[in-house]
Image (cartoon, rainbow, N blue to C red; front, side):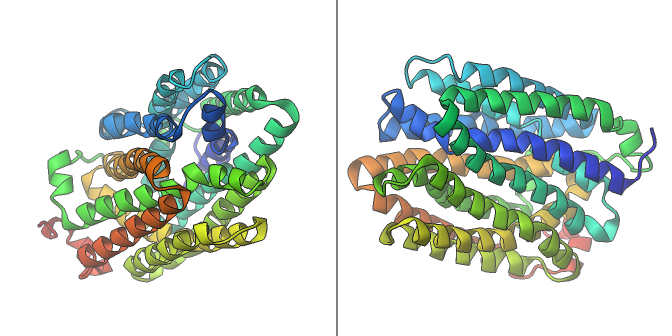
Length: 398
């Protein structure tokens, strides 16, 4: 079955978007579920972090394997294990058991979005990299954004276990869609020259890669405070699970809707400005969250955060995609994904300690500071970046 690049992109978007709805369903419920099983702040942090521990450990290796053996089989395998792991969530009788479940879930997730992003970059025409990656990331974020609202409704009306089963059903459906409709790698990569992946050391010695790696680590460390502990802040403000879902959905939807348009702009303008300005704006909005009250004000700040992140993400995707054409597409995607996952390990553990010793407000204040530090680093490392420098990427070593 021969298909155009745009046709493959459409099928990839539908498949991955449906899978991300399933992941988003349980996202805001995990901290609440852990608390119901008896977890304190530190243990909640460990449970959230375990998902990203496995991502950080295994992410670089899955990327290199995908560069060598192809994309489709990894995506199908990851979706199948997504579906299987959903059953494991309903089994634990204590909070500690959730650590293992989240670890396995994180491992399965490595085979889906990073590999799908690499496939989108593989098939993108040279001057439409931002458009293709922004389009796929839009559907990823839409799926994750729909999920929390749907998850809140499912929990409120059918119970916690129903949310986990819904995630599994959507993952299984997506697995079938990918198996049937996404063409084999030999067709989707037809005409593309296969390049050897750079070593991890060589990638991280590249000034621009290192800058993006550090920025994504600090951004995740700060933003993770919001995504992990906003449900707990909402409980203090007496908001319902459905309202929490609406808040997170608004945040993620705005990121999603800006991906395609700013991806197109990043193809035409210097993408570093999108990363820098968006990162600083995100940090400032997080700082205000513990100082407001009520559903509408929390919603407003999450809308601003969504806009800021929606501006910054496409620039980073374009730059990493350009680097991937030389270094190995899935390898570079996995390296930057590992940076995000590492930040998501630090964030819930650090935030849990801060919650236990200083209080919930300081979780958001310190999270804001971490994001702003990431903005300072990326401003420095991308100080001389231009489209022309990417044409000479091998000369940009430290």
